[in-house]
Structure formats: C-alpha cells, structure tokens
Length: 278
Image (cartoon, one colour):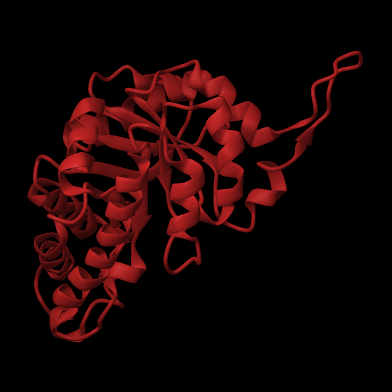
C-alpha cells in the first residue's frame, strides 16, 4: 500500500484506527472455543463488524506462533480475509543480521502478504535494510514504546561531546533521527507508545512527516486526545491501535456487535480531531 492510498483511506473513513487482532484462544467467547477454526472465526466476525470504522489491522504474531502450525494457518486465513483497502501490519518485531532479515521480509511480505512489519533496530542498518527494499511495503521501527521497560534503554540520556552546546538527547531520539535517513515517509514508520504522548512533540521535530504507529490507547491507559494533539501532522500521520478494548469488549455471543460499538466510539472521536486538524 502506498502512502497516498493510506491517507485516502483515513480521509474517506474519517478514522486512523488500527484494530489489533491479538487473539488469545483462552479469551474468546466460550461458544467459539470448540469451533474447528476458532481463531479465524473470531477474527472474521471482528473484521466484518469493524472494517468500515478502521483503516488498519495489526496482527501480533506471537499469539499465532504459540499455536504452532494451526496458528500460522489462522494467521494466513485472517490476512487473506482482511479487505485489500485495509493496511495490514505484522507485529512481529523482527530484526537480525542481513541474510536472516531478508528471510523474515520474504516470510511476511511475500508468503503472508502483509503491508508492513514491526522491526527492532538494535542490530543496526543491515538488519533493517532488507525490509526497506520492498516497494509499497512498510517497515515500522520501534521508537519509543509504552511499556515500563522502555526506561531501561530507550530513555537513557546521551552525553553531549565536550565543546558542543546542544542539550543531551535521549537514546530513542538518536535512534529515530538515524533511522529516518534509511528510508522515507513513504516506507518507514515508527512505533510510539500512547502513554508517552507528551514526548510526541520532540519526536515530531525529528520526523515531522512520518507516520507513527501508536499502541497503548485503551487498556494500557493512553489518551487518544493527547496522542492526536501532540502527534498529528498535516496528513494525520497516525495509526492508533486498540486491541483488547475492542476485540474483548464482550465475552458473550454479542462480542462482534460490542466490538463495533467500541470501534465506533474511537472513530467518532477521531473524526472530530481530523476535522479540527483542517
């Protein structure tokens, strides 16, 4: 999917909602747990109920990989079922030496046909570059995550070399600045946690035009209002993910209808922010 196509979807649907299909067999409604394709059937009903309200679906691959072959099959079925106008993300957090990353890229871009994959940047450019070589595919690099452990490394202050007047910067800022030169706003996004919304202002000074994938709204306590206020750019530039708050809105047979109601609440709020963004 191209950047223009993504922006058009946001404008048409008045939404920048990404629904996270982090589907856990133990958490889906009991009436589905004995279904021969329980995970796919659950995902299918969620997709049917929300596709007009969101622009993207994010599959956290761990929930599928943990089930072995059956999980991979459910993931493939799900990706194939998602409408083509939706932006599909493999939340796989891959990243390894170049030849290994090349195989990861083949797996998720060629075999599974995702539009994007999340990537961990710790091993440097040669671990990220293979993903960026695909046309109309996106690499979403971990920037500033919403988990407590992000304090351990991402927010470390880097010392300023002697004689320089620049204020110290956080490690995550240096990482984002460095990586932004490896790709462009048409093939590179950054994960930025919703619980760090106040930091979006500094991030936007580094990458004013790139899209941000924003987890942490909903169950993790992030504020959609703050994310939109500090993170939105002229093209919106945001994909805000909500997973548990939507897909587990109900544990009963009305789960899809309830998921739609929650997704609709997000879409309506997003519509207001987009209108104010002018």
